[in-house]
Length: 180
Figure 1 (cartoon, helix red, strand yellow):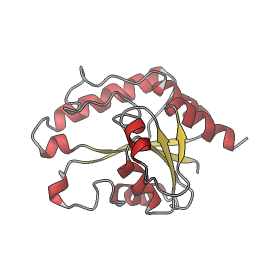
Figure 2 (figure 1 turned 135 degrees about the vertical axis):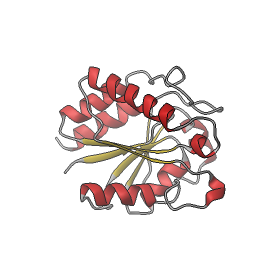
Figure 3 (figure 1 turned 60 degrees about the horizontal axis):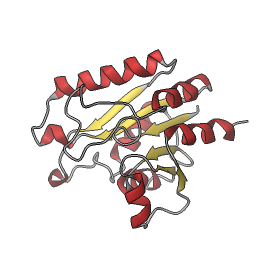
Figure 4 (figure 1 turned 180 degrees about the horizontal axis):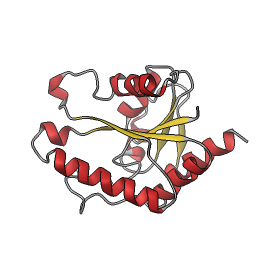
């Protein structure tokens, strides 16, 4: 099975320093829905893994999160793509949970649900914690320069083998062409 994990904020949609809290603030990045559609049409399964500490902080609730994800699914569907699952961590860093990236809990959950191995499993993210979560299971970290990506790249300290792309569309194109 060809499966790719995507971070949400800064990869699929615009990121905000004050958190994306509702459907009005959830705006797709240019060509991100097309990228997911291209992956889907090339036989990839797409799963989103996202930290959503805004829930734990009381900035928005599950209804708002579900509405944002419904919008994401609808826009991706209109582009001809599909997101197979969305996995999220509602905790704050203070909760010290295993599911919050950079911990690999969400990635391990996805691996179990989809019966895939970590070795070589690609994950596209814009922050160091995304890359660390996939590297912890032997996966393939892909950094995009959107969202916090440029700052992440400038800070350095990326996991070994991290590949860098301008955006999700470029990362998707790379993954699709790997198979050909």
